[in-house]
Length: 388
Ligand SMILES: [Ca+2]
Ligand SMILES: [Ca+2]
Image (cartoon, rainbow, N blue to C red; front, side, top):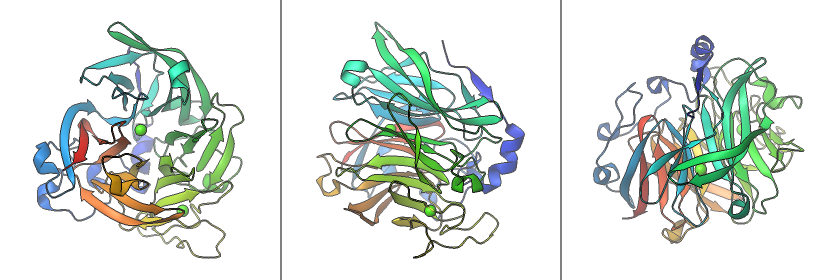
């Protein structure tokens, strides 16, 4: 059974689009200068189709185009395999086997598709070899409006079909509220596999990010079954990336307002400032005090002005690009780039920014050390990056 799409809150979404770093209409987003040849058509809403060789000319990458998807949002590899699960925002989960075939996975929950909402992240259990559990996040409607939810079910591959058995919700962002933006809902397991971390966006409501009584604008830590959920950090806006480094430090990329996109080193109990502090401004120019020493907030390790709109975060540990082991890779939406950040212990500094000529939604490391990227939008391509 295909997941049913529920289109919600269209009017509210339009009203809130102006204060989002990731609005529905690409042409209204903050942009940064890029070469005309590499720009996507303004307002097309579609991924730009580039011959793979031309797209990344002059970069350290050789690119192979492995297929295209309908508003792809996230992917993850099954352990020790080049089979991958890929989400499409409208509510479809696909199993892409290493031979390039794709199969729709049944048993996915209904999602609230609209604005920035829909099916979101996908990761697998640390014990996938034995429990086969797949974790999903999505936007759902309910009492009060919409909110992020997380659930899990066991992947069963049966002949030509695939399904999630026993799927159940394990966490609901509270409260549900109006609008269709800033769900966050990126997922990561702690390196020991004992805890699940969920980024919980502030739903474009701002002040709840400072309110301990609300899940909005938090990073939440819970047991793998969703029990004992607690706020791990607060003062977040729309954290769309989360990853642990090899030493167990937790990093999160976050979309700022007009400017002020952030890469943060996440500490338990840390307050990351939103909306009291930001190195960006409100849309339309309203001032927000910059992060500064002594303000009581944890400042970002790296930030971007103008916005690049970080939509995903991966920390590299592979052998294909040995110079970049331990570095962070960020997919930039409005920046239409893959960004590398040098990480060294608890410090971070800007590395490379490669123009991709399309909104980079997701970046993932394959078991063989190649880097796989999903381009946003209708017909969004799946690219495999190898050393040039
Ligand atoms: Ca992923
Ligand atoms: Ca901040």
